[in-house]
Image (cartoon, rainbow over all chains, first blue to last red):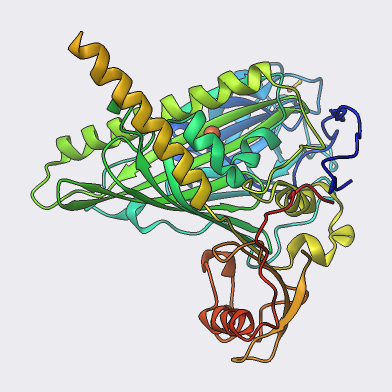
Length: 384
Length: 78
Ligand code: FES
Ligand SMILES: [Fe+2]
């Protein structure tokens, strides 16, 4: 498929839109901040083409995730009530324990021995709730986990901000593609990348980026609003990205951690969630830190709105036509594919280490000129 | 341009490398990183580079055993 000659006429490129996979990615998926599920009520979640319910056991305090529909007569447990460590169905009051076992049927002599519903493997980390999804039903292998973020447990950092938005009509591969898409940061997010490198290995995909704000855009429009920014962002599995950011603000370096995560609802819908943690600068009050985190979250929200606008009008494309300054989209998708095949079908090339460092020289020069031209035009019209 | 084998002077492992220009580098490993002194261990995608391997690549460029592209070619592949 590589078009080497420019003189030969190959005819117009035909887009292969393909169809989104019917299955969902194997891996840990963040459902939201754990505190949001700790209000004593069951919470319904539409995910993986089905309905789930999350609740906190009143006694143990543990969070559990079950299939939402009760195996008795199909009642929706999300409309039920937490009773002790079990969740009671609103239809006939059958009690379901966090491990999926029926813990009691008040009106019956005995519980049918096979009364069991599906309990999902959960994990609470970084103040967030995760479920493990694997269509083969295998538990998470050792080493495939969500890394601990120290800032989420430290008084020197703000609390999480958290936002959630549902995207209908797109597969979540669209957001994962961003990992390698250097140019869109300039054109969509008003930031100015100067360094860009990707590393994929095992179940982790990383993006190393340095960028400046675009001076021709007002600060509010930019992802890297304040100053030069260094970012190390990694997907740990198919859906949970931790992004460490260092921004230069007035001689100091501000440290931020962003989470960009999602879970699939159906083959063409997903819920995108994001949050921010900000390290308090010396002498910063809790309020000021919360404000800084809120500001980071706002920048993040703007960034995702910009992405969403693109997704809603674009087509799915399985055969992107790339130029020499594009990142390794095909290799990223080869990495991403490991989560959509059975474990025994994961091929070494999906997980072998791959590094790609972009030569940004030309892009930086062209973008510099574009920014300068915009600034000059603005200065001219201000003079008039 | 295509991928060329380069041996790491630090650990002896061989990787495939392409340089479309001096600043650009593609490195494809064809075996696990568990013998690399700088990358071995979990989640090594969290480490951007093995400096030993990088100097071996730079040496290969200096010695002319690794060709560096000048006119960047289409990245479209697969
Ligand atoms: S349907 Fe749940 S108790 Fe009957
Ligand atoms: Fe984006």
